[in-house]
Image (cartoon, rainbow over all chains, first blue to last red):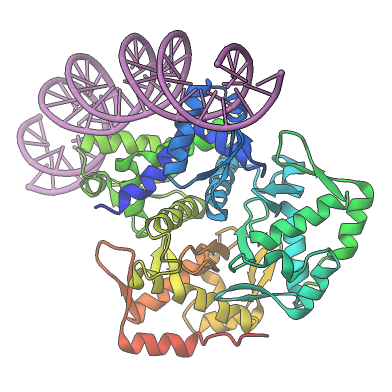
Length: 231
Length: 231
DNA sequence: GCCATAGTTCGATGGTAAGCGAAGCATGAT
DNA sequence: ATCATGCTTCGCTTACCATCGAACTATGGC
């Protein structure tokens, strides 16, 4: 009896329009101030402050004080996963008959899921790493093989980036648009950062859509070729 | 602006304690009448009726009239997935420091996720099928290979069981306790049914826990051996 | 046809919480 | 020190919605 309310509590937190607006805004991956989030959610500053306090108590967002600003971000990959799952279900509802229909083609193709690459491109990255043995999938979780680390080095990603951070660095994240797993965790973030810093793609302002440039598209396809389909 | 409310609406539906109680009860996999659900949720019959109407409008549950009874079940795998994701997050919150701790050992080991096998045993089944090439994982989804169909035949599962049902029969479902995928969809249901009908395991009354018998444990391990870890 | 059971609809009630303005801290700039 | 900015707290109003009793409909059994 005392267990069930937990899920109700979390869902109720997300269930308010203002709070879900805040969470969706944070899904873009960057931390935002209370004022910015108030504007995003379309409510007054005191209201947003109250909502954020509740979300923090619920473990969905985490604050980071910086000077006289207070930045909020999603608290964890898990929190992002919950929002992602709800988004997927809600999107499916909107177009129930248009199965696998291009509800928002750009969003399905490539988007930011909290802090890593999702959508078709995200799945492609994941599959490509797995197919080449760079990423090994085990019941205990995902791990980068030695060859994988070597490959990552080519993107400026090395073990030194993960010093002091406790594993797992690689996380599996279920993608609603492709219905397949993609790479999350700190490693997923590192790859997204690399992709952005090379100018292959950039986040579209105010959205979760990731826009690839023409050369970026080509470079990405070369770096992460589609995995051969085993039959 | 008009997109965000969708997720809020769904979350708000789940956010009510009575409704989440109903949904959790339905996660056990069997359809229940309005009266039964009212009792499960601890509310009066009229209240339950009202809640169920809302859940139905929200696409979370689906009714099935049978005589003067009205049975409700979860509307889809996707709906079950959302509840599962929320359960996982809520469970993680309760024991934030006890990472991967045995919050409920039996539940982590084997449980029913809507209509298929989840938990460690569910992951084992999935991994075992994949490792032997019976289940092939592709970006487009999961499919049973010819050898897989042959293997399934040994469990009394044949293509004839899926006549008239439109694909996909196999669905990937993310497991919160093991953080790995397991087999859902009609195929997942078929395997669970086979396991139960052979007496290897049975659902514990009123819970989602699946209790394996001693011989069932052995038979399951023989039929779905742990996949060799590639390294 | 009649009663019993299952479920729905209606109306009234009450609790909960979102929202905002105003006042109160806290931090940074001048 | 003084002011400005960013955020929080307080008090209040308002709106929503869960809940239940009672009346109503539908289905089945006799």
